[in-house]
Length: 315
Ligand SMILES: [Mn+2]
Image (cartoon, rainbow, N blue to C red):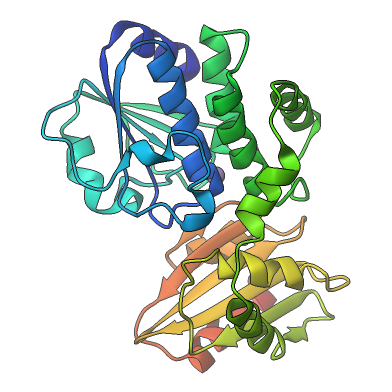
């Protein structure tokens, strides 16, 4: 089994290069930093090389200052990519990973392309952090406080603060153990989420004011042609956080016109598998959260295509 193989490789090899997907967020960073912490505790040589700079609201994470955005000038025995459904998702750091002798792929996206030499894919776990927790426990019975902060952040962000599917008893059992290491969940919550500027919230408000619902209220969507990422936090999550308040909504969609393309993000509040929708349009993700980009199209066209697919194949 892959977890066993991964444990053996960690035991036997000396140098490791870690990365995760572009558009880094809580689980991507939390799981790679917890792994970094484990490998250092095991006295291994370990580097993290990410395509993206760490967003300001995640710089409180222990070890985040070790993350490099330029490749270390050497070759590594083992590359480990966490939380990325495909090697292309790691962005510009991709070549450094293709050069490693063994490439390990640890992920919980159902759309994972199994790009590694060793692939450990668990589509039914809450987060990559939950998988890294299992690796960590193979080496040490007690998880350090710093690693606990990283793992907690991964689990807590990828479960939408314990509100998405796969928030099960195992998740709470792990979290209970992490809390026992003395971490401060209230502080972590505010570090991650209370990061926006007032103008970001006004922007979110303008987008939300155009919300539309259809198909007996089961599908709710918003759109914008003025999308601009904020360095203060994840505006996409802020929008979905609010759309989840709508009674009976099952599929939530955000359409963003970015240049000639339309980026479409999906969330499901439970029953419906939005990965199926994203996949049909060339993207992917999880049952509960997925996305795709429709090339050379308008908001109007993208909306028409996506909603008619949902109407005829999903609902
Ligand atoms: Mn994840």
